[in-house]
Length: 287
Ligand SMILES: [Zn+2]
Image (cartoon, helix red, strand yellow):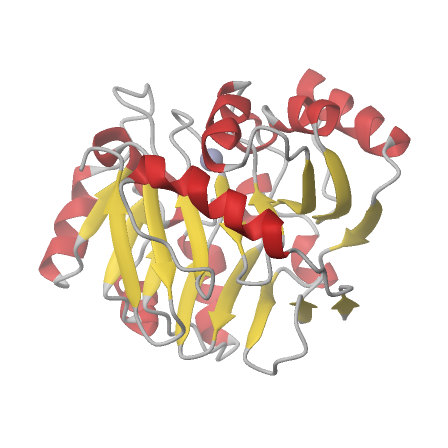
């Protein structure tokens, strides 16, 4: 369990909130805010807890994440409480070396799964020099940022055993963000084989909102998996006209048949969601 120290951040939050007005939303400080950043083909999700903790999950493919963070964070704020890397593919890790350079990080959580790429080498070197506390994600595990029993991040996958001998996508961190009565499931780039493992293990996947796995790839989002989550909304992080053909039309048809509305960063640009603990409010940058 990672117990974070409570931060006293009155004025800090106020300024943070002012910055969010660019999203044409009225944000109260008593809400959990998440932004699916418009970083092209890749994942990068910014989260701010009501206590003001700032979390970045993945960094997208390149420096686009820095511009996006500049939009959602006050210009003078150069620290992040936690950076999570779900898995070491370029479209998730590519922007992180720049984030490490520009921001002061308190904590880093990643699986320890390695990849033989130039950008992974840069990441590994950067975190070795980084004074932040480093944690190895290994399910089951809980990340806490408050004393309340209903505010936490539940790391559901992978365990140490589940990391071994898998394609990198299937070592992605799957985690449920719980804020009072609202839940959001993060799925990295897992394929239907990891989805099946979670189903076989009887993991409680139910969530109001799901980040659709692997940018809507054909090899993910099995019907059984989506039904077990039973989401009211799916979010796809995907780049316009990407060369992988994400999201796949079969996945879009399946989600439509299951009655799940979708938002996509290639169409909605940045997607901003906010929970008061009972329900979610959703807006996008095109509004
Ligand atoms: Zn990806």
